[in-house]
Length: 320
Ligand code: NAD
Ligand code: UDP
Image (cartoon, rainbow, N blue to C red; front, side, top):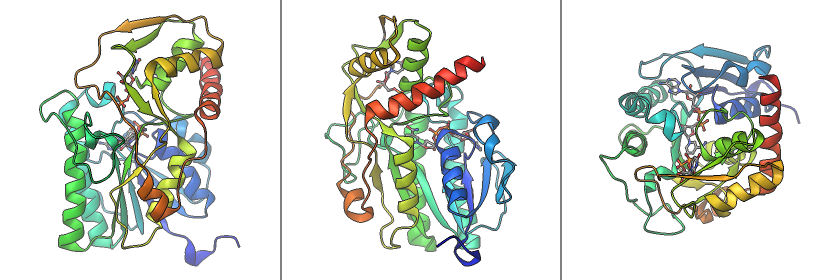
């Protein structure tokens, strides 16, 4: 049955012109909803949403979330925040403001108009974890004064705010902890490992391995992540999270580099550079809770996801 007037929601996606946000807007429109995309274009790009601009149920607002905004909506996905270490460390004070004041403004809006609100939190709340894989019950190991703290602590404080608005004001919240996610529409100069390695491989430039390359991450393809976000928003009201969303397949950066070189048939060699401060050594989600409560688990394998992402970056290079 197609969507009708009564199951169409007005949905605000903050950070909607970003990598994850643009895929989410696309999915929500396809489901027949009215979508308002809000962004200040710090790391997002108009190109990501260009194909949606003619859609009658799609609206775009240029706005910086450190300032309040008044809108009539039924649901809010709060994604606005730079996600790549290079970008969130560019102006760390602004990153804290976006994470914390952005959360306050969106929670205030949700409270006023009685909207359901989902927070895009992060595996970074676990810091450099001493528990492996990471379960939601783990409280984390974060350096409060390090270079990553603006993001990690900003996102931790946002979680605190979500749960205080939930307890104090009965706001209908959802909190998801997103683990490394990748796919088409990542910014080519974003600085994250997948976009860096693919761009370097396609240009036959050295692949920059930070540290010894034995640190691990678990990479989730964007379509799987969007499915998880939508399921969580529409899941039972008594399951508010926090819930881990990510792909449990764990790879070292050396393994990732080998995969990218093989799939791109690149002539790139490896170039070792110093490890960044507080770089987590291991990261892998325990997704037992998401499986149990949402019936969700990723289906796209790393090779398949990398191939799609490589195709996207090839197109970008072709256009340049
Ligand atoms: P992204 O940088 O592509 O998207 C973030 C978007 O937020 C951009 O469009 C940016 O312009 C916008 N933005 C930033 N500051 C803003 C502000 N003050 N006001 C309005 N808009 C602002 O990153 P992404 O990967 O799409 O991440 C989206 C969300 O998911 C972020 O909140 C991020 O913390 C979270 N997350 C992502 C990952 C991942 O691996 N992609 C992992 C964990 C958490
Ligand atoms: N990394 C790397 N080379 C790069 C970019 C990143 O070796 O060119 C490493 C980085 O040190 C980290 C991992 O890849 O250990 C993931 O980094 P990313 O910035 O993508 O995300 P995060 O550290 O936030 O998980």
